[in-house]
Image (tube, rainbow, N blue to C red; front, top):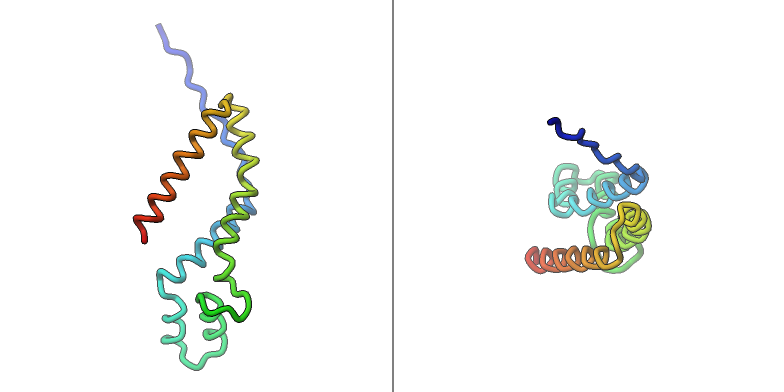
Length: 119
């Protein structure tokens, strides 16, 4: 007796603009970890362009908005944009409210614990 064919789920379409925005935001975060502003200033001393880029990639006292200051609001925006798509997709797959809520609670706890661990 042969087993029934395995049907792969159809991949859901991605929102490419949101993925690109997420990637850009992650690069901004990685610039601090890689100490990119400091490296730019050391490798290109006196270069106005290097100073401008380094200044934009570093957190500083409030004197106006730099891209660095927009990282956290960017993540909030991404969550707000992605949430309706995620909920609709899971509802199409037949997930009930309780399962969606439980998933959200577990993911929230994981993020909180990761944040505590990383600090």
